[in-house]
Length: 172
Image (cartoon, rainbow, N blue to C red; front, side, top):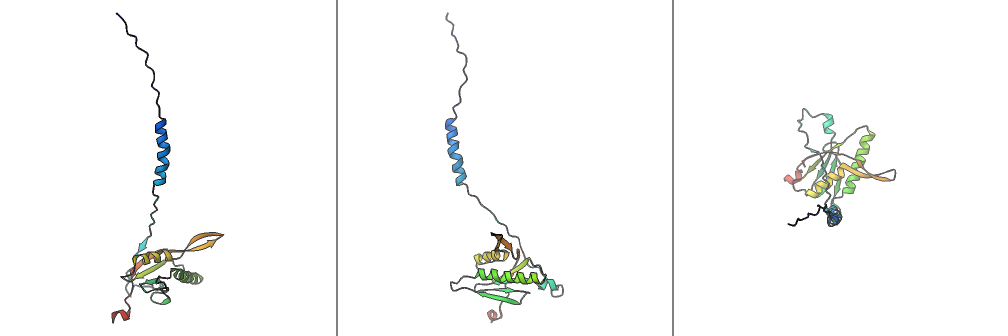
């Protein structure tokens, strides 16, 4: 009888070059196709409810921005008009002028030793959403040059919302 001889088992060699080639191509493609998203959260507050008896002098010293479809009005203190900014010839709100007016208000307040970080945006019911968002961005900060670098300087980062007062001529 013949004996069968078995060959000793040899270790199988792993060939992973095809897999490595796939990874070399796949990883950069996935990284380039990935969408990097940034979510910005802005804390907003509702204006405090105050009665005539409980409102103090500090509550009346509030910076307001009244926004409607035709104009924007900066008030300080509440109800006292500082500047009315009408739309430009193109029919757009002038947010650059708004920023300059708010910078001047902030500067004058700081000269008097008053530190204000809050502002109330009062908007009409038919105000465009994008107008409100752009107004929020404008009142929060402005671009300033500090040591040859452009930085965002804070104006009024604490934003509260409310309804714009109804004008007398609108009622009639």
